[in-house]
Amino acid sequence: MRAVVLAGGEGRRLRPATLTVPKPLMPLDGIPILHIILTQLKRAGCTHVTLSLGYQAHMIKASFDENRWSGLELDFSLENEALGTAGPLSLLPPFEDSTLVMNADLLTDIDFADLWARHKKSQASATVALSRQEVDIAHGVVDIDDERRVTDFREKPRLSFLVSAGIYVLEPSLLRFLPQAARHDMPALLDDARAHGEPIEGYVIDGDWHDIGTREQLSFATEAFRADPARYLGRTAAAELCAGTGAPWAVGG
Image 1: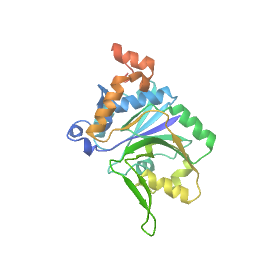
Image 2: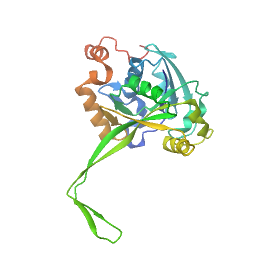
Image 3: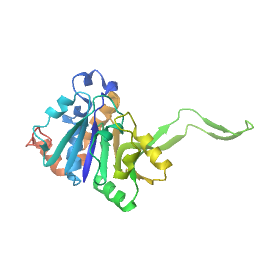
Image 4: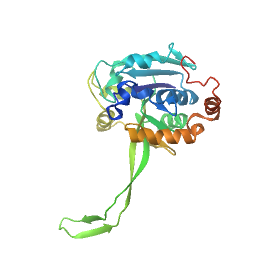
């Protein structure tokens, strides 16, 4: 399995913390988000990861001594200007096979190996990981028809949505819809592909997912990770963390 981790964002909503520490290195209970992600990818069978960098790229590269980390082969791609959530892929060599692409600002217990297997079995051009999110509406919701007659009234309903989790498996053919070295976001890329008849599948995460875009979200993710690190890292890595015996995310480790 090969993966690309998009780690170039500025993390403006996390300021002032991200003025000195890039968002992918923000710690969850002392462990950088990016190191948690790399540990998960390795456990899933990933052998080669490209880190797509932008803001404070030198700090992220400095957190890895060599182009290998805990048994993973690493390489780095640098965007000189913000290219969105899909644009950075245009700077990479053409994909040779299916590639997992994900954001570096999330915490999840998704089974990456199962996502990969489901994608390969589906023969889709792309598989999008989805998280079910629920929103409580504090007021009565009213529906009306074209004649302004009330057709339904729901008191303080809970609405359920599937949202993109920022994790994808892409086929090489999909990248022909990507403009070269221009800002482009993943929804636009997938919409272009769908418009040309490319099959796009969804994979619903049967577990936990946290976006880490704001200080409040960072706090929620930190509490979730602190409460049960084994849920995200597996028992072995979590035990090493608790015992402080050379955990695999240590610099150079």
